[in-house]
Length: 308
Image (cartoon, rainbow, N blue to C red; front, side, top):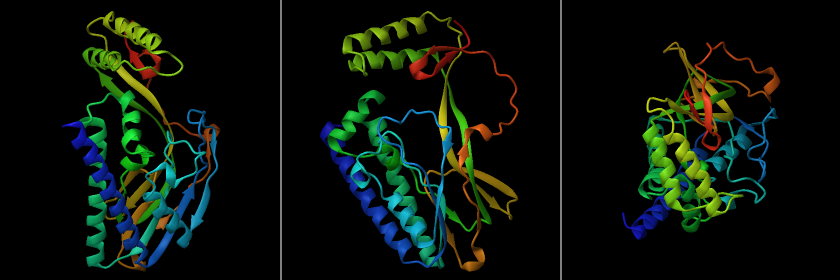
């Protein structure tokens, strides 16, 4: 796709997304509020994105205030929508749920609106991560050149819509992202990084290129049958546990944004639990069998291998 067309598509997608979110906000505000509970978390200031998290203090909000916070959170796409002191590298999370009363017509209208919004979010992510053709390290500069202040973490995040579950409970999750890779895929990634001819602080371009070249040579020196995987810890995140008695099944969802719950009337209002403060010292881990020993080969990529 020609660069001009891509930039035009980006602006059109974001403008349509903003309009869609504002429409959703108006739709929700027009419906009777049955119950709302959101949980604000401490703000992360610039320079503190990678601080180790031991404790998270939670502040609960109820009723109309919680609803208004949720709707503002859905619409927060740009830095201009938040304090300049806050990090744009860490997503602002607001777990919780808002439940509104809807008739069948409104239920369908809001469901379609949320589906359109989430499709636009996927389209935006595809434009930036795929159609731009840029490596991950070059995307930040590209996005902020053409969409100054866009917080991609917020813009990509979908709105979760639920239809009258029986209960919603909240908690915390610690996990690792694990992705198996072939040696060829890692080599290709490192070669793209070299071709991009960019630097990462605190290195100069020459120093960075030398560092990546050393990583490339190290990967090429591994046995052809070496197993490679990315094992990257994800910061603790709020989750929601959704229970439906009819299904006799609980579903666990990531909950960075308030869940939007549609109910026919007060008889369908779910039980909504609290989100307690997070304390790393009191986290209980399920038993897991010992994994195969791995060796960290490229720390910055969280890349591990079973061979050296």
